[in-house]
Image (cartoon, rainbow, N blue to C red):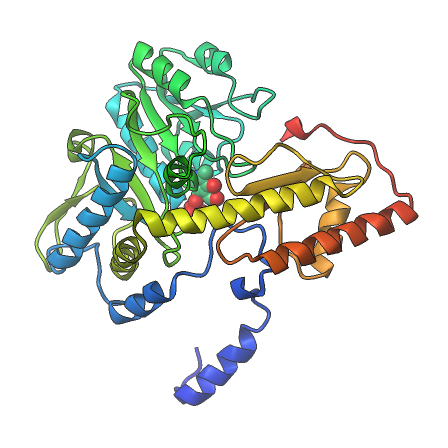
Length: 400
Ligand SMILES: Cc1ncc(COP(=O)(O)O)c(C=O)c1O
């Protein structure tokens, strides 16, 4: 840090220059992110309440009450009016909290968790941090976790089974109902990671899509991750973890002894946490309602189908699966998919790259003109690769 302060005007100028290389959601070029620009109302509200700290709820009891309301709204959406939980820093923290609860629900010396091969890296982090053995079960031909593989992986040390409702890679929904039965039969904690799907699937269902049960309607589901900062369009730093009932949380909360607002028990991993993002989330939920979210999800899904159809029409690339939610993965049986990724990046597109396919998340900041432009660039890139005849051997997608 330099010795003397810099005038505000100059700081703004410097920051404008320093940040010019950051991509902007409005450009429509960010195609591989599960985040988006928060709604305008959320940005305004965030600024108004930036100093609220939910790490000290006794100082901010009204903000705490608003968090309870946000959790109630999410939990009702996930078919459990009695759910409890927290807004946390994101899906990673939510999954860490859930794995901690699972571990503590069983008295086992060498605990193991069973996750799908498609599980988010947050479960590897949980395993590493909490010294859990992680067993990754392969996927079936639909990229869902293989149910019999999960059954076979259970041992006397299993403390958690995880199912995913909206995988990070392809947006697939695991056979949650079957996993639920296995969890009940074996009395094992069952967590559903719906970090992305949690604020998509309930609206798709309302729109008439055939969405299997994935939430608290299934008796064995003990907790669900659902992140407002993904399809909820909240400010970054708003994840969500919801538990079936208070008993799980109560016995696993830490008493924080020094708080200015008075001692308080909490089960989040982080201490100081943003109240502004929670208040902004409350505002968005109220502003949009189920109807508003459904309209946004409908628009995203319409674009998703246009995109998937457009990819199918380009010779040399094809969608990995027909999209289930607003995520499209595509592969190539002729060209190196990472060459395609590099060429797309040169043209300013930012997709998600998996070992054998590229992935687009059709978020609310993406418009029809962006999809058209993208498809035209993709076609052009593939055309050039064809001219160079850089054909490659296809590697199977299932290797991821
Ligand atoms: C299914 C799933 N779970 C968890 C996460 C982690 O969320 P975050 O990046 O908010 O920590 C992601 C992120 O993409 C995800 O897709």
